[in-house]
Image (cartoon, rainbow, N blue to C red; front, side, top):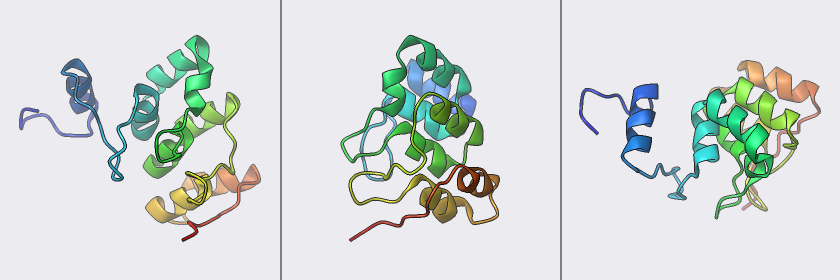
Length: 131
């Protein structure tokens, strides 16, 4: 990517998509288009899949992460609201023993993030990772 494009910005994401660059999470699991959209809060792509193929909104990657986990890690409330509207569960864990959606928000954004209150009001539990 050219140095004048900021990685993680809308322009950077567009450049990466146009050039076929696979975006990886910290655990090195490649993100598919829906998971990547959730991780950056891209509501256009998430809305498209909500009508075109909503099953992909809940697809697990090789580590058991779903788009709702990526959206939680990114702190994207609009993305989480859309995913829940189309069937995501607020207490899904990332993998069999991983953190819950609420736990990811707290870990990455703190207890004062608006998503904490939103998810708690929906009955979300803060479940940490089990070793």
